[in-house]
Image (cartoon, rainbow, N blue to C red; front, side, top):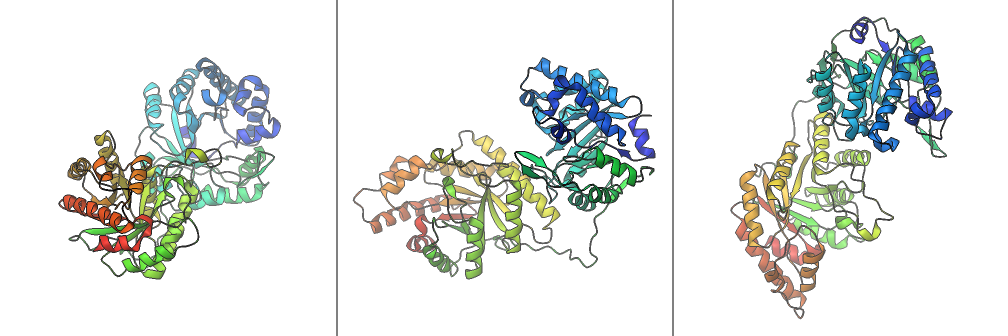
Length: 575
């Protein structure tokens, strides 16, 4: 019987986590290296899982790729062949074998797939994925080679139901359901059984694909550089009983030993025929279908928008910032925006600063969110916290790198870039904030050498839900014409950056040490070292006033950057 016929008649129980179980036996080598160095141990582990009830096992190849193994292409092929042959020997005629491919094998996918096909693979499983794009070409290649091969795709999500690429479980299931080459969709790793159950319960889709569910045993603690999981077999089994209502193939991921598989085998009824899945999350009858528009430009279609950036302080003194913010609330300003530790140098948190200003002034606020300092979990938490505090507008940027002098002690994270973070926020809107959605925009780099590439990136951001764009401060006629051209090519709101320079020292610093801002020499020459503060400030204001007039015909508004949070500059610009 092939796997398709089997699952139509009864549920299939897979093995548990080969890697974490192997590490309890031998912590000296990478589990996948044991295919060559310790084949008897690999065979014994497969046999243990089978002896405890697994009728589907995975080859010991999750991390088999040239980077992890530190080997040549030929040695990789030998490793894959050995793993397959060991698994087939252990499985005999009564147990299915899935050829396992992990997320770090991108460069070797075709080599690994070709080797499995040559060995006679009937099932190929891609697991712990964050996106479908990388594996889709190899999936199509496998099906072209042998259309009977059963393809399983499993994705790793966090407790909120999002992959590292910012894609929700809902959209993952929607995308995979529309791909004919995929036979089964599922979730593995990342979360324990309770979180995985909640995620499955909240997916809203009809699909004729088979569904898999391989949660971790729970959440580990680290002891002497090793992941240690609680021995929670009964809890795991009880939760898997609920999960089995949603899944056709069930098994375990990190921390699930053969004893876990024995327990679910003994306690879960597998004699259930397959039916087309109708997954529908519960919707409250009285839930409002009305949606609010909390964007800072809602209802302002016929006015020039004004966004004003204030710098969060470097210390605990926010007196100047609050003085300027309180002035701006009395003027025709649409939103105050706060940078997120620009140039990789610490300032007060942009979201917390936004909350304070919004609560004390009532004006619309917009924190910048950059990808440099926070991983996906931290950004998710930040957005949820901001939403709870009624923050709805955000500027999403990739972020400046950490200064080179600090890189030994401070590391940039960059789990996401601005486009992927926008896609993540789009998913959060669809899943969590449908009645009052986040409004977010991006930045335009007018100084990029290949302007067509910048336009392409802007359009990607628009596809990801961006509703507006801010530009870096502009001074030169050439850059103004570039922005005019960009505006002609994209359908979105553009607020042009306006920042008065306040001294020759300030002008030289911006020109030479801040990337993305182009200051021509003629602007520098407008200032002199002996200018007093008032004269220099008036000179800077005069220059940007001319810029404002030049961009008036195409700009949807202005993005005022206030140097040093000076109230006098804000007053002059607003005037």
